[in-house]
Length: 615
Ligand code: ADP
Ligand code: MG
Image (tube, rainbow, N blue to C red; front, side, top):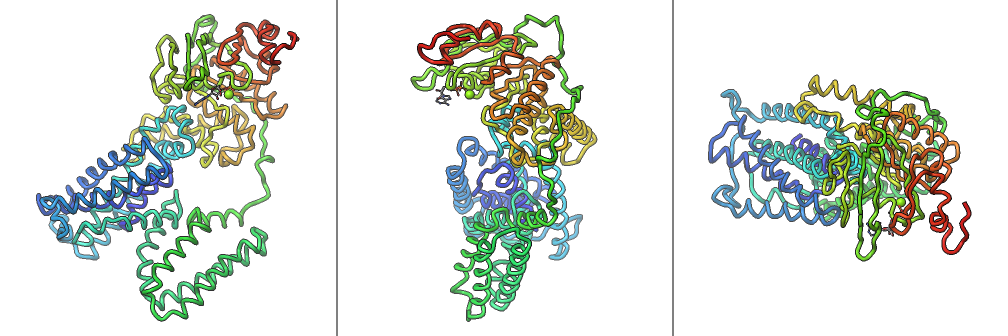
């Protein structure tokens, strides 16, 4: 149960935000030692030692998050590993507080003047497990959990939806470390003796293995994983038990393989290796006379097996099986819902008004964006009038997407000024620019693929949540109300773009055209005043483009200003109020669509070289 509490936390970092942490054994050690030291040196009670352990470990979690903000993947693994090692060395060396290699002895806690015995302590840990389960579950299904998942799906898109990657990575590590601190504290009480070499590299690897074996992103996976890592050493010690379990495993695998092949879920070849593997393991176990020489090899084989066949862990595997059994022949394409013309009461502060006509909402002047020697944008002015659809066109590589990245803070321009609603946005982060009212879509779709369609839009609605960590943990009235409103709003946005019936599909399963519409719905969730669309019609079929045109018009009618990058000239010419043309990073023309279309410079840029101007 103690390991489960830690694994709930580790799963937030590994499963949800997708960061690797090899520092969790170190955090576990900090939790245990905080309790040990507070108890022996200061004589603090259980009710103080546990919260202190949580807070102090959470603080170290924030420190561990620092490298995660700069590096990722294998580099992050290295840095967190170094963190764990340093913690272990410090515990060893700081003899004046930690007693060094001697370790610290402590007693079971005393609660309300009753000194708990083994059994009472067991139930106390049970209680903490249940509490952690509730808290973690609530966090992960709230806007916080969605933010963690979003930054794994697409960090750039999270930032552009106002969900600061920076902040939520730190949150994830802090919450995760807090749980490691609680687990460490309970562990100290449980073992009644702590020493530095417990919190070593093997323990860290074991934790990661438990998450992978049990299954990421599920609480049941964490509990199963914890059970396995606790029971595995016992299993590998007892030869008879090992024979039993391996035979049972072989029977289970053979049966499920047989069912899978008969029902045609999978081919015979792909089931051969696991079947032969488990049968051989079972036969081999009866040949063994002693386990000691084989323990590590068997352990290694099991890891290989899990990594190869159970990438989503045991829980993931079971879920997949059950989804096969209930899969009806409905497919996404049949659930096609045509665009219902739902009105958006939800799009708040942008109002269609004539009085604002002629007012500039965005004023970018003399923008220079240089990558090394390449001037991707060279002294470009872009003035966008409120309420307009402003087209931005030009051949491939002319700097359109770069302009959009500059406007949304992904790149800081080498030179130039950008004013949005009269305030400069140069130097601001993408997330604060997004929150100030600029939303966007991406040329290469950036959805949160592992989240449902509805959740994708809910990430866009992140800004509408004012409830804090405590509200979420206590499931307060305020949080419930906000959650309810956000869900309603997300559904109405999905109806608006014609994805009403697909809310529960995973975003990555949507057909391409629908993914583009979902990106628009998510961007609208930000309640923007300026919406930037980067080639929304790319890859869409003709009927889809008609639908898209209607949606863009409706968005404009709600008073939202748009910048539209597009190659489909019919679309651009039919709906844009103004068009700017870029070529090799320079603005070569600007004006009404018809005027621009017949401009010889534009024709030349598109047709290339010396072709005569044909409009
Ligand atoms: P468009 O969207 O108009 O097709 P882009 O804005 O994507 O064009 O690209 C304009 C130019 O800037 C291209 O030559 C591209 O290679 C270059 N570019 C864009 N982003 C970067 C970057 N991060 N580093 C270096 N060059 C870049
Ligand atoms: Mg582009």
